[in-house]
Structures are given as structure tokens and as C-alpha cells.
Length: 163
Image (cartoon, rainbow, N blue to C red; front, side, top):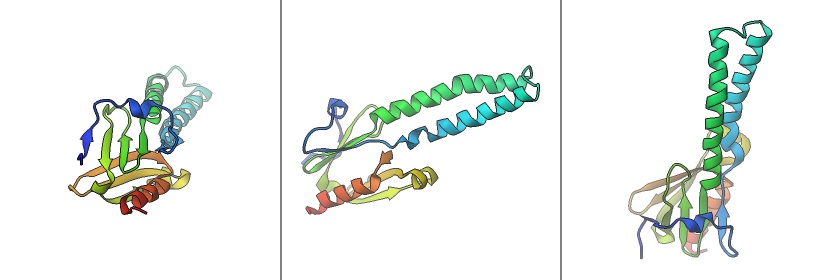
């Protein structure tokens, strides 16, 4: 049986969902930090403008950060949203941890020793989370920002135990 390895061609993850195979995608909470930063800088700019300090260096600094930083953060979140995938096969787990990583990975079900779900504050509020897979070889694999990570953990546990 193959061990955990990089797949040379990750086009399988770019294809639409296939009948009989479950695909888990990211949660929209990926965009929360970008929205918070946009709101914070937007409100700061509005306050500085309303108090007549729109010509100050602080206003210009906030405007530059809002004009450059927020679109970069949004692009990063969008690329991760479009590339994070976990697909369950018959006896294997195929996953792509998302941009900027390029390679998809495959784990045979018999190499999985345990599956855990971790959540931060946003995950507790909105329902997303990180799936942590521990392998029998001692490795740990984390796929962050997933939608329905508990359901995915149950599916992997069912696959692993043969149930």
C-alpha cells in the first residue's frame, strides 16, 4: 500500500464533486479577518475625515493600508477558499491544504491513527474548524478553515474503523 505522499497531478481536486465521493470545502469564515480589518481601517478613515484630519499623515497611512493591504488579504482568502479541499475515496483521504501550497496529498485510511477537530474563536462562532489527522507513522496533518469539520472527522473515523 502507498504511504503518505505528494501527488504529482492535483487536477482531481480541481474537478467538480463526483458521485459517490464526498468533498469538503472551506468555510466562509476565511474572509472574517479581512472584513474586520476593512471595517477597522474604514471606520478610522471616516473618523479622521469627520474630524477634519484628512490631510494628516495618519490618514494617508490608513488609506494606503486600506487600499493595498485589504485587497491583498482578500485575494489570499479567496485563493485559499478556492483551493482547500478534502475528498474522501473508498479507503483513502485526498486533501489539498490550499494556496500557497501546491501539492495535494493522499493518505490511505489504514495509516490514520486519530482525527481531531480544533476551533478558534471564529470557528466556535461560525461553525468552521481545522481538521487534524494523526498518522500511524507519527505525522500530523492539519487542514484549516473547513466547513463541517465534525462531519468530516466522523466520516474519516467511520472509514478508518470500517463502519
